[in-house]
Image (tube, rainbow, N blue to C red; front, side, top):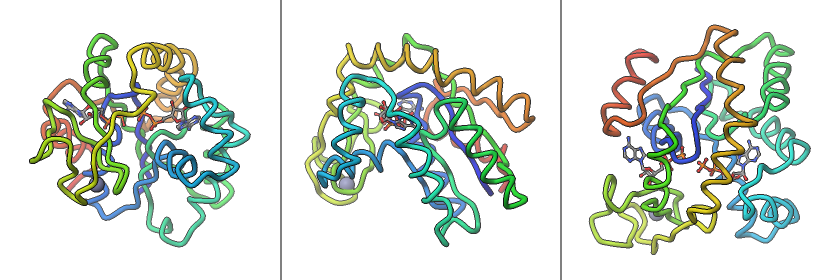
Length: 214
Ligand code: ADP
Ligand code: ADP
Ligand code: ZN
């Protein structure tokens, strides 16, 4: 099964993708996580990507598309995958379709996690990320057992620089301009499924499993 997650920054794509990964045993590929790992490791890609991410802009397609095409051609992706945070632009979506088509393949589902803008800023200010394992928490809605410490790996949680309210507002504008058109695009391909991302995380996951099947 090949799935992409659509939705505004903070809609819960990563949270749901991780739950899908566990239930359906598919690799979870997050472009945001790949960029953050490169930033941490100080790679050339990381240095370039950071300049855009810090401003709330998208990393250019020229740096993003090949990276993802390479990742999905790895053997662990043979049985499918969940793409979280890619595609984010029409050219990214077109590249993905073309790459799949050339192998006689196609996407199964585009899951659109819908959350209105006014709920996004509070979601983001409470988000805490783990630098160790990448798991995401929320101080109110998905709190760790011990404040500030990752349940899974014990690392100290942090607030992402790009989750500052001013940057979140810019990211939302970028989302509406560049990423939202993908909803229409995948609707046209008949694989769009929209879920209400304002529900409780378990309820959202239930709605997703109803779509994907047991
Ligand atoms: P969120 O989950 O909050 O939407 P991500 O972790 O997916 O954030 O992405 C963080 C940042 O990484 C984005 O704001 C953007 O700058 C960059 N990024 C991630 N994926 C892509 C992509 N497919 N194309 C361009 N930029 C990307
Ligand atoms: P995205 O990957 O779309 O940027 P995340 O999965 O990182 O979003 O979720 C953003 C924040 O909202 C995190 O702090 C997460 O714990 C929290 N969150 C995710 N889903 C829900 C939900 N259904 N209800 C409340 N908070 C949620
Ligand atoms: Zn962790």
